[in-house]
Amino acid sequence: MEGQLGFAIKLLKRSEDLARIEEVRRLPLDGLQLAAPISLIREGGSGYLMPLAADMNPLAEPYLPREFGPRETSGTDWYRSTGGLRRRLALAANVAQCLAALHERGLAYVDLNPNNVMVSDDVSRQETWLIDTDNLTSRANPKWDIIGFPGYAVPERVTRKAPPSTLADAYTLAILTFRLLVLRHPLEGVAADTLDGDEAAMAINSGRLPYVADPGDDSNRLPHRSLSSKLFSVALSGRMQQLALTTFGEGRLNPLVRPGAARWRDALWLAHDNVVECTDGCGWTYYRLLAQCPACGRQSPPSILATVFPEWGGTDWAGITPQARDSLVLSPSRSTGITERHLWGGYASGDQLVMLSPVAKGFEVNTAEGITVTDGAGKRVAAIPYPEPQKEYRVRVATSGRPARTLRIIRVDAA
Image (tube, rainbow, N blue to C red; front, side, top):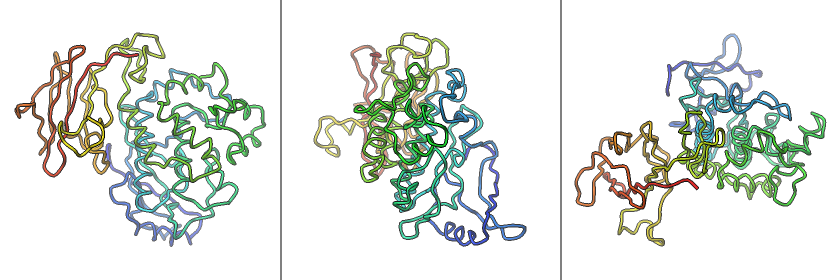
């Protein structure tokens, strides 16, 4: 955990909830960015002690607008100063990654909302933890009494047609991601704005309004010329737009078709890896394929793109020759780390295995212990030259017990 490790106490309203915390303490939560209960408090009230970094605050403040509705007018300066697109993608990806790991262990978080997501005070960092683990539940012992936080509720939970589930978590994750990136609830369009506050909230929470980007129904579209309508087109990648359409279209009232948290995790990290910073110094971050900065209009320079392939001639990704894993942009101003998820698609560790640091005319190569980066002749690579147009540079990344990978470095012009 970044920052100074501290502790927090949550007091419970009912003494009988201590039995539930005892159950949570026995759950398999090791290795998750989750403030699991350390010990119980029985004297002077009921509660539990949990670990938490001292320099973290809830996501709700100041990274999200305080109110739902058309009065959200925080502006582009606020969006940029609170981390911009790159940091928002990282925070959402961290939440999705934690939820996906919980779901793989047969657990549902149940009450995801921005008050239960703790993030670093420092906007240059991306530390993210989930708290309030007393709400964790499993299929064998679901907690029907928790309906959900206003604005982050799930239709089948509001109507009490189904217990908490991993797919309910995925729906709330999609809401959180959409609001973090676009600054509006995905069902909060012009139709919602015509309703009074309570009626609009109920219609949104119960899923009675169409998705704001429903291709077959624009009755609840985002207001024209609003910040949210502009952000929708530049903050959601194509893959995320498709996930949101499935989640809030057919999946709004049919949980079985919703994309799970793991798909959101993968899409968010891929988007994060393909964000660049405006070279004009305006501070805006945006996707590398955009021809110009959305904030100041500066023309986008070429990007240096690293793409992971199977070892040339290998068969572990048979079917397409060669089949690429996802790509990432190499920053011209800071080190870019290549991790397990880039090389092998895993999320057990976020350690940087290969570090590519910008230097004069290229990138310096540094590796973690046990990782080798070599050229076609098997010679260790200490630096990679800045690739010329229409040319590429390839290196081999290898370690014991894992398939070798080929890393291709190319220069890519913006659209």
